[in-house]
Image (tube, rainbow, N blue to C red; front, side, top):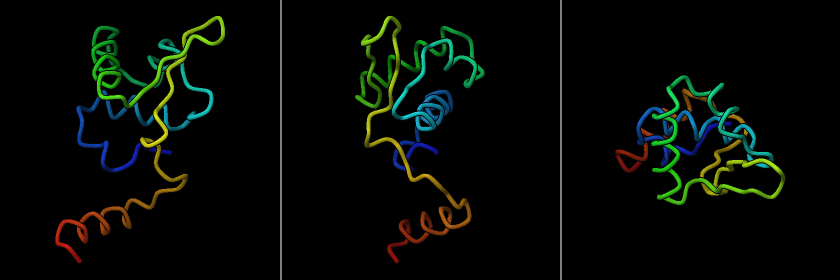
Length: 97
């Protein structure tokens, strides 16, 4: 899964985080797990997480003995995406048809 189109106009690191979290919307990911999915240094990862948290696009929980980051429900896109159809839909929306 990927993050919905309306959340893809963010910096690349933030989009990569949202996409990684969208793949595991119920379980979430720890920071270390995110780090394995998003190829950036820890400082960049922390900055991106702070921005996403500030914009209410992620949720951080400590329900178990570990800290888990989850995507907000409205961020997660459909299970299957057809890139060509998505591009076509984006063009149609852009030109109002």
